[in-house]
Image (cartoon, rainbow, N blue to C red; front, side, top):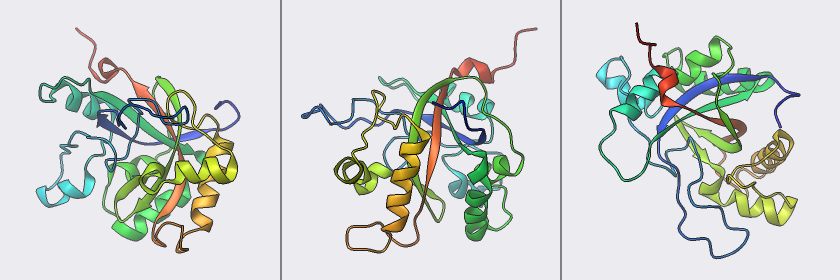
Length: 213
């Protein structure tokens, strides 16, 4: 799924999977879809070491696996299990996302902008697939927020895999192109949302801890 392309780590989130209720059709997403969009899922505050006025601007993104893992370990008691996810983008597309963010935030050290500026791969983890995300003034919308998953099925015959995410970068890019080309149209998304393909992986929280001495 990912061997032919290099990816640049963009950031980490900590939180819970998105649940859509009990599927009523075979095409419905499974319960518990991994997502890095706080439009869909409950994500834990970043608690970054920044000025208080910057805090809402950065949430829910974490600069490192350690910070995301700390958020999971200090999460309030909940029947759900919190997890750590990373978002990576194709290395050839990292500069475009960084430029989008700089146009909104300037040179502030947002975790995603900081990671894109020092290209590195995500740490070892379980790859779940590709999520189509839309950047808009600091928020990362999911393709499901605007029904793009239904349009992808109806117009492109593209459907998610077993994890509820797209299984190939090619499929994710086709959905991304559809979404960006339709911006501002009657059935499209707002003009100021820029869509891109993101590789989503899950990481054990204990990877973010220091080994015992």
